[in-house]
Length: 325
Image 1 (cartoon, helix red, strand yellow):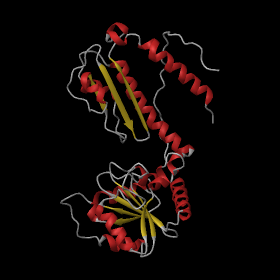
Image 2 (cartoon, one colour; image 1 turned 135 degrees about the vertical axis):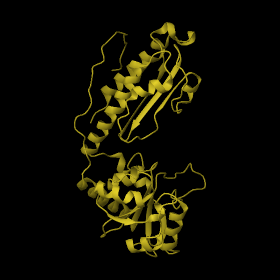
Image 3 (tube, one colour; image 1 turned 30 degrees about the horizontal axis):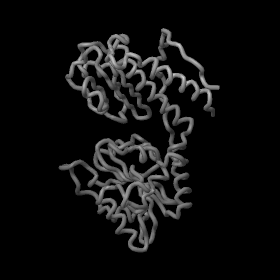
Image 4 (cartoon, one colour; image 1 turned 180 degrees about the horizontal axis):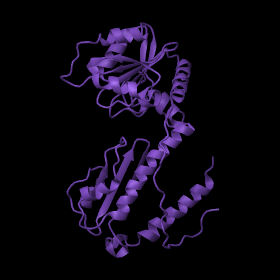
């Protein structure tokens, strides 16, 4: 039955500590994911996949290969009966060897940064043809944005890959083939492959989430009036783990927008403050006021505990009592 009432009391927040073991996603899991993708592709009458990644859109290619692009673009080409081929620029070449995923590396220097050497690679069309892409095939292209009914004017063949990649793929398969947006096979909220996580993946997510939540907790506990946003952001304790989003912290008028990076803006007593800290695998965010008690809040919201916090807490209790494995 629903919670009838809640009460406000002071409690001590326990110290949770930080992980001492870092869970890793092994090659065997990556190989199982690739096989599962090929099975789902066969059900969709797809002959293979090309998975695109870059620094801002690395999750799908990393999910399948363990390689997360740093500076450059990358393509993971997956066809049945063949070893997956990972196309890399100059700087990704060595890093991909360290990642040790289930792929063979292919140097494609056009993916390199401007003004770097680009004279030792074949044309993209020739490389993709060597990977097994040929006329008449239906290739699933995975970028990072599936298109749906609300995206007026876009359909299954609308791609979010760079034009030079999409145009080359379409030219290779020709009029008798097709390049299909297959991002939903990985990313659909209800049944995409990435919506279901192995125990190893959950452990890796929890590892990241622990550091993200501890960083936000440090900000909540340590921010004082008179600090700049930059000084408060130092409390996040960035430790070098790769970020899933830029660190966000803002106060005063800027706080309502949520997304700004910290600045030299000075935080004052009673100011609204927002903070978000995302490490790949976990993100924590909070919004509130820099206040010691209701007396520091704007007059029209000093009853927020009774009107917002209490009902919210009761709803959360009901939720946790209702959900299960």
